[in-house]
Amino acid sequence: MQIPDIRPLVSLNEGVRFHPAPVATLRADLGADFDLYLGVKVLGGRKYVLYKSREYDLTKERRRYLIDQGFTTLYITEEDLDQYLGYVDRAVSRVLASEATPRSEKSEILYQTTTSLMRHLFERPDSPVILHTNQKMVTHTVNCLASDPRMLRSLVSMFVFDYSLYHHSVNVATISVGLAFKMGYAAGSELSQLGYGFLFHDIGKSCLPTGLVRKPGALTPVEMVEMQSHPHHGSLLMQNRENMEPAALDVILHHHEKISGRGYPHNLSGSEVTMPMRISAVADIFDALTSHRSYKPALTGFEALKLMQEQMKYELDPDCIMGLITLLGPSR
Image: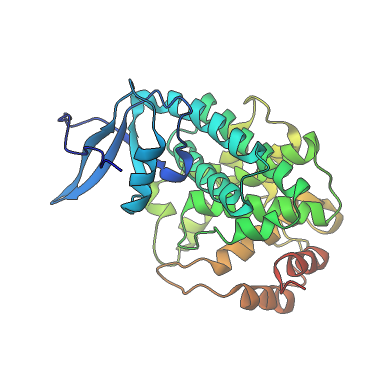
């Protein structure tokens, strides 16, 4: 195979904003009508060099070269973001619709695409295009888990447990949708709405100071109060947005409520804490416990579930915990 020429083809002025485009989201011969750049680490930062111009589609040979050379991420400019999002929707839809596509490949493109889109949404929470494309990924997730029970474990195997807001959002949404099926929900518009709430549950953190959200250590009491405002910010941010109905907003606002009444923001208790709230709380805590932070090591899935079952049985719904153990415990 002829090696593609990846020498720098263009010098970029400072100030051009780039966004990551995971190679898993880039499929061959689907009309990639946008420029693609390689990110090359240089002293003091990263230099972007043109790999494919908008005049040419991404061929199988060029995509294979990226994979063989170990590239996992390319980059697009802010100017091309909308074109990229439309392309991603086409690519994911085609891969998931093909019966010939292995489950592992479907899981990879769905997980990588949704995490990339959530990263964009945290950076631009007011973008209707990014929001709508994320909503489509939720629908894809619901349909995949409904049609293939083994898809949940395949998706979980893709999880990245080095904590970031966008990975955490996708991890929680995936687990929550799977758990919702376990608790009796069926695929359809209701579950899709809940899925929007699960995926966007932490979007309110985009309204908080970056230093607070990324603080590596324990929060002070004052900082904790500010951090606990994120469900309120998130529900305000998402209300009146397209396709965001009360069921989704309710999850965003109340995903930190506990059946004991010691959650926030409204200290709901008992039957006031609805099943979607209970599901999201269990998924949120499980992912937090199993994710690595600079100030704490990650627990294994077994350790996290054991801790939740033994130490949080009055805080979290025990049926949801058992449901999660059934879903993620040893397969039979």
